[in-house]
Image 1 (cartoon, rainbow, N blue to C red):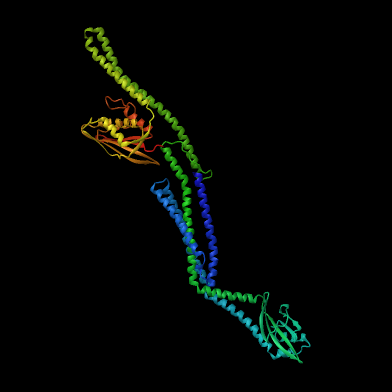
Image 2 (cartoon, rainbow, N blue to C red):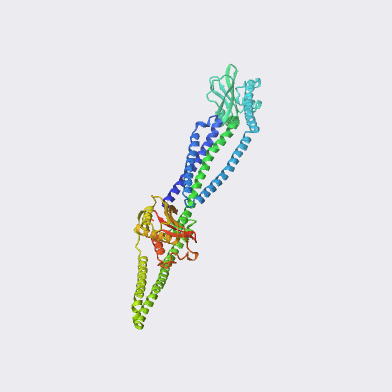
Length: 585
């Protein structure tokens, strides 16, 4: 059973760790997805986060509700260790909440502060300024190309096509920002090129004079302008090139995208904060619930060996010294468990010795009492015999007069000895009970019927015993028990009185017993005799043998029951008998 429970605990723990890992993965995924959605202007509710937000907490709430219901049921049935288990669960749950709440408040406050910093006006102005500078830089370069292409100075420099190298020197001197020049004849044949290789165009593009479309080659952006020049009846096409700094277009694009993202996030700033709080709650609540579930698991794991110890201690207290506790070799309570098992083993050995000693002592006491009880009738027998002999020798005429009384005295004492020996035989050789399911009320009625109306002045009540009350006992032996107790109750009542029979069910550990009460309002038992009532041969009656109540106690003990009494002098006595109601006790 313990191995099965350990395997179940391990399975549940692995499941909890798996759920925890899934939650962490979902947090990372949805966090990135949420930022992308907000920056792109999409609605978050279109994604799977909504079902996840419902299913995860609902599953954990149902699981916790089942555990709470089980805990309440354990309280109602007074299961061992349930109060300690409840305190552990509350302790772990409070620790989980105390850990999660400050973290949540800190996280939300940190996010709020960070967002106020991210979306501050300075950052927006910086992005706009950077983008404006980049655009102005590009526009300035284009304006330079546009102005220089139509400039008369540039046209004049271009007239000398016989010396192309002189043209480049003139152009670069007139406008140092020009990075390259390319001259084509009217048929499209390249006449001259000067500049970086990436600035060369092949073939001549079919564009009108003026600014040409920007071209990106790798990480380089090139601005060009086209001029048409006629010299000596021949037409020439001249292309001027300016290279923007490396990654200029890429960085400008990044600035543009950043500006759009910043504007989008700024526009949804409030919604973004709310979404973050909701997002945090969606995953924080399942984690808190998961921690509470772990508290149930850990409390069960901690309390389990303690419960086993408690149950084993109760069994030992009830007399079962065969109980042993199985524990984990490396468990923290292993030393305690081993010590308990050793203690029970030693108690079992000591109990055997004690039982043997008690038996010897009991029989010694019984032998002493029996010798005393036998000696008492022997004295009048001896005296009667001596009197007969003396009269026979010394006064034969008076012999007939004393013979009959003396012989009757001897016979009476011998009969007392015979009765005492018969009861001793019954006490010493009492048979084992043949237990069956016995209706208690019916059996008590049989005992009362056997007495008839011997004491009309004594009222008998058995109204407090239900007809369906059942005990597992030997009918004849139990009739002997109740007959003896009823006889003692009758004898304790002087004049009118009352005897009441009651019965109800009681629980001792996991076992049920029928507790029967026989109450009288007689003279009660003197306090000095309380510890001697069940001792063999103890009696306060002139004609008693002192074996009635010891036999009663012996019968109850053979039935795995218990008998005791409560008494007050001149108020009355109540005997209590606990008998099992189940066959397997």
